[in-house]
Image (cartoon, rainbow, N blue to C red):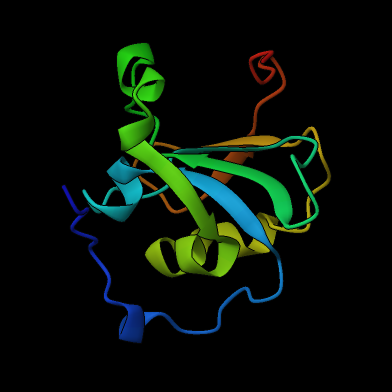
Length: 116
C-alpha cells in the first residue's frame, strides 16, 4: 500500500539542502506529527547524514515494523518540521528532544542509539 504523505513533492522548499539522507518515521511524514526526538549517529554510507527523526510517540513494535519508517532527504524532513534546521550541524552523538508544548529542543545526555 502506498504511503499518503502530508506534504506534496511540489510543497518541498529548499530549507536544508545538500545534507544527505536521513531516517524518519511515518508519524512525521504521514501523520503530520512534529519531530519530538532526533539523534545523529555514524552514517551508514556516503549519502547518509546520520540523522534519525521520530515523533517520540513510537513504541518498539512500531519501530520494529519497517513499513513505518523510511529514508528521506534531510531537506524533506526540515520541511515537515523547520524547527530542526538550527540543529542539523550538530556532530555525531548528538541527541535532542522537544521541550513539550514548544518548538524548542533540549539536549539529551542519558540516551544512546540502540546497537544493531
